[in-house]
Image: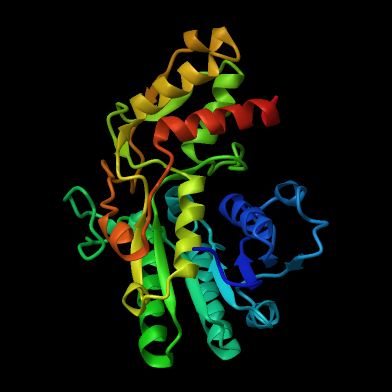
Length: 327
């Protein structure tokens, strides 16, 4: 089911990896997209394919500023809130800024959305909320204690969203993202995600460093599966499907050793020398959970979610994109 008519969608963090992909998708469906971003982690080059689109509007602002949030939501139908400071290590190094952006900024967006009477507030939640819960697969109703400041902030987001739904009648849906990867994900910087970072290193014939012995496992989730979930969250007319949270994942897990094996295999089709690059191993990172695997049954049942890209399928797409854009 497609969104009826033309709607105006605000995407916070719209110059980031996920936000820019969402922007491109919804512009392609003929909707108006407003991007709110302060470019602290987003990039202008992520917008180059649609910045001139007459249905696209860029607002340079900060979610920590309520006035910026209020300005951005004017005339908006739906909010896709992606803006955040990600990364567990970043939050451990700087918990104050992480909290200011992820909690205070989130609250500002909720208040602005409530006051503007937007139709629905859909936000990026996180698998980090499961914390020290050891059960697999992860089901939405069973979480543990957070293991990092970042995880705390994302859990607080869910609590605030629930309160705004109950108290003010604001429709909210949280999407607990599991290790999202794909085109436009930044390979550079101190807090780069593992897949683009490893791709960059392998292309340069450098040895990727795996934290631990490589047997930690993750439910790696390709960007197109995430786009599908955001669209389904906007489209649903089922009152039972709103004011809740959903795992946003593929529903399978692979170890970091598996990941590197696939990356070397797919990248070596472009450069055979990559197959010979050795892998380095180091210490486990503080705050990392050993294993992550999502149950996606709730999303399938309530939203009709059908993820199309496994890790291998997504990596083939991503590796091709990176090869053409990083060389």
